[in-house]
Length: 346
Image (tube, rainbow, N blue to C red; front, side, top):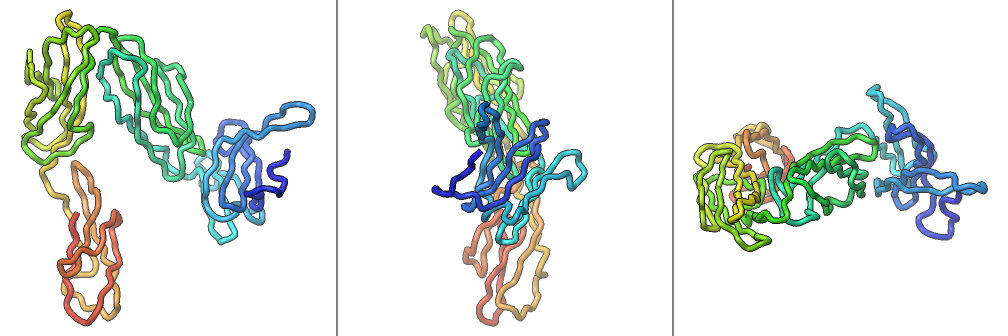
């Protein structure tokens, strides 16, 4: 099999190895190219002493990965799963396979929603500490489709009153994680849309306005029901907005149910989080009042938030904004000899 005949870019100047990196009992061909791309794929015997290479995954990870045969696959951490160790011509060593499973969360639609149309667009957010290889989408425990890791949405056909949809994310080493929803379908049911706020919205106020609308296939829509955490706030409600009280901190499940004159029901659900308390933050180094003789200092801190988590930190020096960061430390430049005030806002 000719991987590259040298006449086109990239050329094969990295290393190559054959191993079962994704632990599926089938070996893969793994090789690096001079542009920093690592390729993982399956070699297929197509007969007549000919072979075909089916690419399973590739990513730009450095410079000539596997250079000077610096590629090895073995279970170096004794977790009964092989890892891929890769060196390159810059002296870097990277490990693929020693990682946590991907994280995935279906963002739309929310579980419990009902639709009068099919297919339905299912979207999600996913992350991995290296790279996601592909997604498997199951409907009622039957494989519906397999799509590449770069895609985070798919149109799914639904046909029953209760459809269980599961999206499984796989990384390149075969580790996986999943999220699932249950949504309904009825050709004559009203389709309810929560316009705002968006799902997984954060609020600090004591109430929030929820806006919604509907499409009824046979145009005989009657009224709404408004539910919060399984408690019905409104019955036979005729407006397209509602003030929702959020008195205590926590997560609220807001469901809008639409009912037509034939008692067909459709619904849409979102989750909002009330968080009225500021995050905790404490600068641990240097101590206030410290004297330094260097032109820069490494400021470190601890911080936490019980409900929302922390988005980022804003660093000021003498009241002037310096930078924002998601790390728990930052190097601050100092100028002339004087007292400085360093303020960190989370």
